[in-house]
Length: 539
Image 1 (tube, one colour):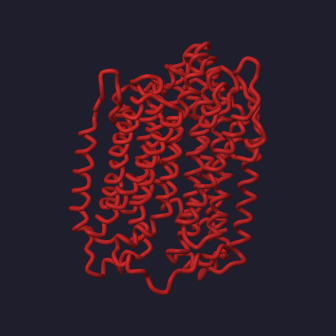
Image 2: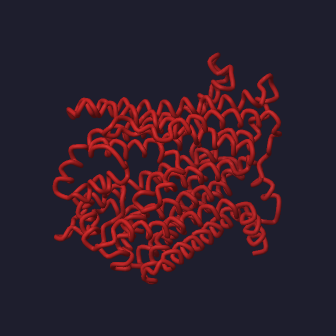
Image 3: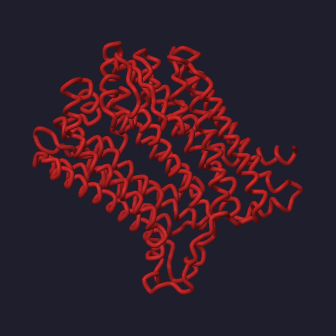
C-alpha cells in the first residue's frame, strides 16, 4: 500500500497542470453550453425544430448527441454530452499511456522494478490515478451544470456519464500500452479506437427509430457497443438511467485488469505486437534529418490527409441533403448560417465543413511539432544535434514538415471538394468558395504550427499538453462559439473564427493578414529563441 501511495503522489505532482486544464476545460464547456442553449434556443418551439431537423438528417445525428426530448436539460445533453465524453476520453487515454508505455521508453519503469514495488504496480497506480481524475471531472462538470440552475439529478448523471466514458477509455489506453513498443503507437491505437467508437455511436443513432413527434430517437445496436453510446443512453434530464454508467465503469475496470495481467507476463520494453523489422542500412534518401522526419511522420500525415479528403467530399456532396431538409425545417438554415455567419446555404455548408478541415489540419500540425518534444525527451534528438545539424535547423525541419503536412491535408480536401461539386452538378461559384475556405483554413492551421513550436521552445515539458489544450480552446471558440451564443469578440480570438469567407459582395478577408503576420512572427521567434535553448530532458 505504501508503494501505491508513493506512486500516486508522484503521478499527481507530475500531472496536476495537465489534468487541471482538461478537467476545468470540460466543466467550462458544460457551463458555456448551457449559456448557448438558453440564449439561442430559449423557447420550446425552437428546440423542437432543431431536434426535428436532426432526426431528419442522419449526418447531424452522426456528430451530435441522442435526441431525448425538447426540454432545456435534454436539449443541452443532446448538444454537448458527446463532446464532454470525448474530452474525458482523450484526457484519460493520454494519461494511461504516459504512465505506462512512455515510462518504459524513458527507462523509469526499469528503475521502479528495482524497488520492492511489484511489476504490476505501475499499471495499478495508473488505473487508480485515472479513476480519481475522472471522478473529479464528473463532480466539477456536474457542479458547473447545477450552478446554472439545471436539475441536480440530471446534472449529476451528465457528469457521471462523461467520467464513466473516461474510465472506459482508461482501460483501452492501458491495453494499448501493452500491445506496442512505443508510446506514440499506443496513443495512435487509443485515438483511432476513440474515433471508431464515436462513429459507431453516430451510426447507431443515425440508423435508430425516431418517435412520432421527432424529438426522441431509439438507437440501433451499433450505439450499444460504444462507450459514447452508453453515455448517451443515460438520457440526462429525461429518463435519467444510471445503469449505462455502471456498464462503462465495469468495462473500463475489466480492461484495466486485463492490462495488468498482460503486464505481468511480458518483459519490460517488450510488446505483444511485433514491430516491423527495419533495413540494416538506410536508403540515400534518408541521409538528412528532414528526410528522416518525413519518413517517421509519413503514416500520420497520410491519415490526416485522408480525413481532409473525406471532409472535403462531404462539404460539397451534402448540399442537396441540406437543401431538402431546409425546405422542410428552417431550423437547419439557422444552425448552419449561425456557424458560417455569411453566404448562401450551400456556401455556408461548405464553410462549416471546412472549419472542421482547419481543425483536422491543425491537429496534424500539433502532432508533427510534438514529435520534436518526444525526440528530445527520449534522447534521440541528441545524436542528431551532435552532428553538424544545429538546433535552429533541427527545429526548422519540423516547421517545414508540419507546414507541408498541413498543405497536403488542405489540398486533399480542396481536390475532393471540387470533385464533389463536379459530381453533384453544383454551381461554379462553389469552386471559389472551396478555394477561399481552403486557403483560409491553411493559414489558420499554420498558426498552431508556430504556436506549438513556441511552446516547445519556451516550456518544453508542456509542449504536448499545452499544444493540444490551446487547439481545443480555439476549436470551442471558433466552432461552437456562435452556437453557444458567445460574444463575437470571443469567437474572433480563435484563428478558425477569422478566416476569409465568401459573402454576397465578394470575399470577406476578415483577419487573414493578421493570421499571416502571426505565422511569420511566430516562426521567426521560435527559431530565434531555439538558438539559445538547452535540451530539456524528460521528467
